[in-house]
Length: 372
Image (cartoon, rainbow, N blue to C red; front, side):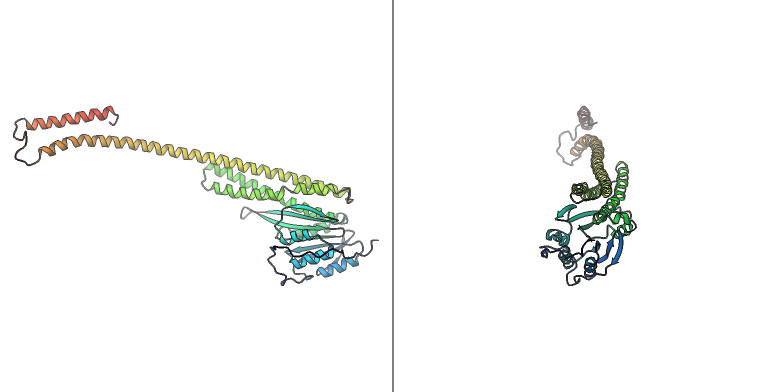
């Protein structure tokens, strides 16, 4: 039987330069359960103790030979993380990442402790949007600490499912990590399906000529890129775990479970890549259709402008033709006593003939230039 557990010796990490924790240390006293969602002590796959706060968890774990602690926290304060670091010997760099949050998905090993950052995703049907969450997991020889900075993933469901499978839970902290990663990967499937459905709707909008589709394509592309950032590192994280199977004595059954998660994660990454490529193709098709519509509109405008120009030319030509006799009539209509041809017997026929001649000449000129 293993000797009672002793507190690990490691320098207590300093607070990070920048913290995104919205709750101050004055609101959370170290060891209190304000952020503690659940804390259990497990022996041979069964829960034997339930702690009320961090201090109680430390005490129970020390008093339980061969025990494993699973501590779940939601948006813990810096003081609580510093307390955990002092108790479990967590590396100060990992603690700083956990305090600051908003980390990229990754796997880091500090001695016998694993630090894993995962990005969960959930598809909101009512808003047709993807909500992203973040969970940090510290895995040691006899403990698992989960830190959530968002509502998803729901680790209470993971804990309940694992507690119903003692054969899995007795395999140790790595089994808990597997269950969490499996839940995160399983949560990606509805997101992929939701995004695919959105893309199908967008294709209908594109070929239906909906003018609002460009904005929707942009918004969906942004969500897909964010989803790709969350999922793409997952296979590398699992490969990093696989590299330590032999060194840290992971049993073959658990290795099989982790390889299954790796396969699912790889499939999700490939599907997300296909979705992004589909959106790129749809964006190109939409741009082509928009250009075609603009070209058709320009063609119609050009044809209308040409027809209008032809009508203006006809009107201008007839206006010029009608202006000539008006000009002649206006000249001979002036009331001066001394004007040439005013009292001439052929003055009227001459004026009429002159009007007809000028009109005929102008008509011939405009006809020749296709104005009439």
